[in-house]
Image (cartoon, rainbow, N blue to C red):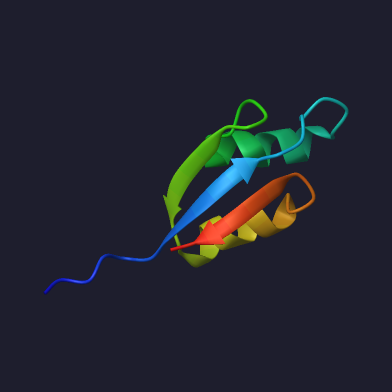
Length: 63
């Protein structure tokens, strides 16, 4: 049996309006554009770091 690589489900809970450009660019790099949108990304250090940088706006679930 092959094991699936770990992934993160990242959901944008709050709007990006009123946030600084760095936060907006980080959300865009993750593929998040509108509140309620969920993306699935590989659970590597760079993605975890981006999610941590905008943790006040997102919910992260690990599978």
